[in-house]
Image (cartoon, rainbow, N blue to C red; front, side, top):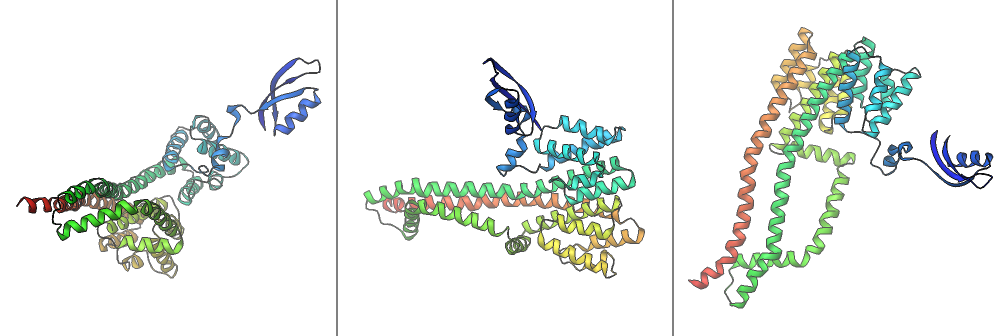
Length: 402
């Protein structure tokens, strides 16, 4: 039901207007016709429009980002810790939430909880709440410590966001520099080199082999850039579509893991996320097998996810967690030893959190080292290319002068 505004004429021809609550415009017209009002205009006021539906129809809605979810988690944890009942807390969050997707999700959760469902069940029915989140909420409800679990979940989400932003930042910087360098080289080939070529032809200067090569390359860019741009664009989109398929995703993840420096960043980042997620789940009371299943589903790298799936299978066969982890090539030995100690002492959740901290520290060092190494390397490569082109163009002039 929504509140529709209308304008019309009554039986005496007098202009009337007002608001009617109805399911749709047809129902509004039927109601007004029964009241002997001739409808001129019926419209839905902006306050009644469900923006979420329009965003979903355009393909840009349906989910909210992790920052919005983190903010919701923190606020709900604070309210529950203060003793506010869950229904009242959800009502307050719904009214104060600015994100339309989250606002709709909170409203749906409140409705489902009011109908008798648990909070975890209500969250599972919404897009944006992943399995890890819902499993922790379910464990918190069962143990009567939902506020404490939400606080722990907020800390876990902050760590996950930090790891993801570090990896993205590490990959973004060299990508931007390389793209800028390519643009500079292309600009020189298309605009600057032809000027030198014209000068050399006017003076009938002898052309060395390296200069001729640069000139031919410049001609190629000048003549075929109009074809290269769409071809490269199609190739990039085709590749991006390919790596979204199961086969392409496996190929891409396998390849990136073998890259120097980048591969270790990806491995350490995924292992840090795995350790932190499993440690958080176990500390909340989720069983080891269920926790591993959730980690398999939430791990983005399919190679690592496959290895974790195999670890879960070995545990079902009777092995401990440390034994199959020890057989994974990229898993550091000290980590497996720490996990074995945790299993022996019955504090595996605490040990996994320590392992996550180790991986996070190593990730910081790797990213810092890569940045220091790649910055001068890119400068040398781009500087060498640009310098080589300039030398190739000036070389005939130096020979002529000599």
